[in-house]
Length: 64
Image 1 (tube, rainbow, N blue to C red):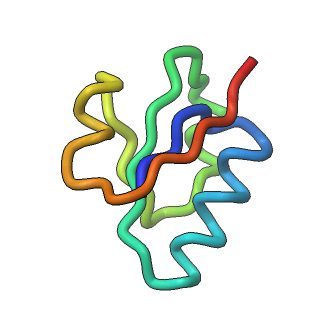
Image 2 (cartoon, helix red, strand yellow):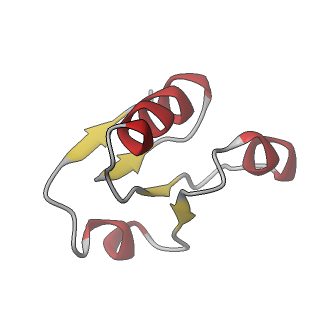
């Protein structure tokens, strides 16, 4: 699963997906160090949005 937007809602979606046994990768162009430290350990943060789509069967968009 790819999660685009790793703020409060995106990180909750990622956490739930991980608990369901999914491999989760995410992308957020404005991610801060503080936000990154609050993310679940099992999420892979991608540097490019295109990389987050590779291998994903599902995409979840959380951004304004």
